[in-house]
Image (tube, rainbow, N blue to C red; front, side, top):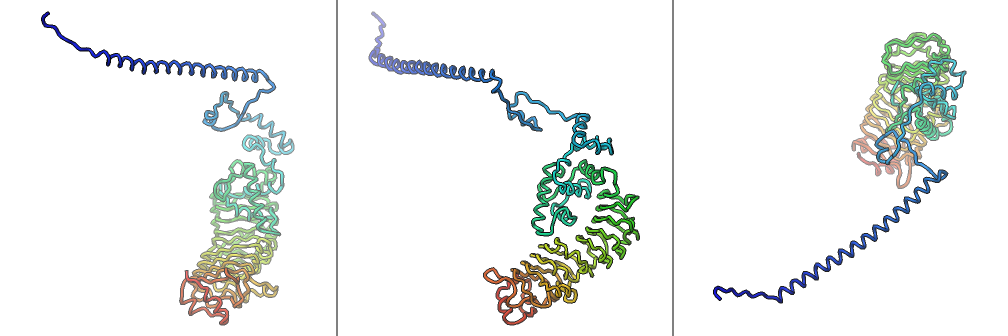
Length: 498
């Protein structure tokens, strides 16, 4: 036997390897079989539950009396997609004829007969929300908003002031309560979609709604000249008026009318809005040149609200004293106006609106020389006067005689008095005042003010008592003349430089 090869095979190790592999793979196969059995059992249970649920749903669907659907409305198709809508249904607007039929049922034939064409226009564009207002006051407040220019954003507080002064809101008792009522009315009109609100303190009237309001205010078109609105159209000419006898309200605000015609026959006129109207001349029948309001203004005996803000008038005529019903006079942004004699307008301080005045802020009124009228504002809490270059007195002694005779003590509820950049100011009041609520007097850049209306008993006492803040140390230490040492001792230690 040649070329033989000897091979040694370790049988024991081979057998051990085979045995180990068999144990591992056998366990895996056994476990897999066990898992498959469990999975099949679970699937059978799920199928049984599915079939049971399907049978119950089918039975409920077959019972018509228990069937229900969830319906919702939206303007967005994306919302429908997110909500999983199966059968979306588009709701179409009423046709013109159907809308007019509905309009007829709600308005009635008598109203419709006055102007059928306009009625159809209103039916198409408005859908009758005005008639749903339950209170007559709500309707009147809504109509008043039409006096403003188209798309004009009206300050809520300004609008409420108009309503109060027009008597649409009762301001006789509590001005705060009246203001709250005003905001409540605005909310009602916004919810009725008759006014549009925004995130600011303003509201706006849609142009179509405004057209409807003007139509209603003019007695459904029969008395168009009772409610003359020519606001915000940048017109150079005033609209023609045939019958001044029926004119009740006129709004010419935000225009460029150079010549304003009128008539001495407008005895029913209660509201005249001229703010931001760059008037140059007014006829002698109505007013005269706006730089010189005539004495004949007294002929407007029913006038309650006069807004001359943003005009160039120089002074107020004594003829204003004849306006016995005037309760609101707006002179904002009349920088060259002298208001001498305004304190004689008795109705202005007798009105509850004035007596409830709580905050007065005056800035850059360079022709202002005194503020004596404010002694009649018995509820005034804050007075800020800034940049009145000719102001000499807050309360003038000679002009305050009427109040003194009536036993009026000025500023019984005043809390804060701020005076700044008043180079000619010499007196706040000529003698010490109780000022029981006063917490702060702030004086800045008032070099001629040497006396404060204080004695040792004036102002609020205690931990949060009255203190004086100032801008210049030499003023408080060298210029101020205290009534006596007790007054100086009390207030000098609490003075603060700002």
